[in-house]
Length: 69
Image (cartoon, rainbow, N blue to C red):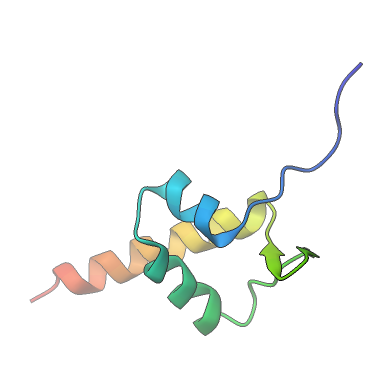
């Protein structure tokens, strides 16, 4: 039997998966209006894999801008 339950992640789990500080993930989630939580568990916001990809892409863009002189 396969488990089709989506794996939802909190901002802390996203930060851990991407190996970046939590504050950077929270910044991206706050600034990008198109990255929305797909659910909540109490006060925790939960994000799907697509949101993780969008956060990772935005963090990459931020790093590239920081590296430019």
